[in-house]
Length: 253
Image (cartoon, helix red, strand yellow):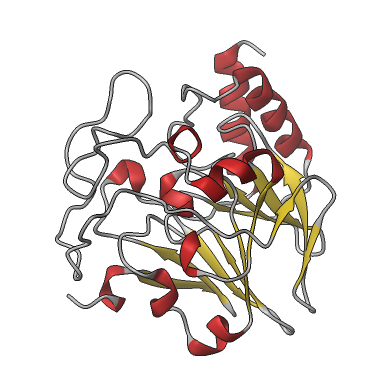
């Protein structure tokens, strides 16, 4: 296996790739989204940082790239330190910049051989982070590193690619500063961990279930055409509303 083989690129639409790491354990197997714009490229989230994601991107993308983090967890911000233009949610920016374990969840003892240091609350996860040996061996891997941020993002901010514009939506609950990117022209929502297939995680030390319910109510009301989530495959508006309403029903909303 080479370093480039560590990442899987799936072109889900013209000029759009879902990137994941098939050799990472299921709980930590996340998505990054690479979008080719007319004026610049956009990368949303940066996976676990076990291997260098920046080296796997096309040269034309690396030359003119903005990176947006939807939140600071280790499976989404792991390679952020590799990039020169990184924007992060304002609420979590200080912790992301410092690689604070209370924001990244990657505490002492966390590494490719063990998830024991992952701050996820009881019961703690066990087993290895990876299901195959990383090509580089990932020596000394302990999760996200400090990041020199270029700026922060909050509700009402925007990301302009020239032919596509994304509005920043604050979607807290899973984490305090979780954001999504909303393309009002196409109805596409890049959701991070606000909503995805599978059990939504709302029991982390900094999760807020009341805020999460408000986020579910908000996404139900959006005229979404497709969701590009932080985990798993993309899905449409019917499934979005099923997931969100299911969460609200379980919470007694």
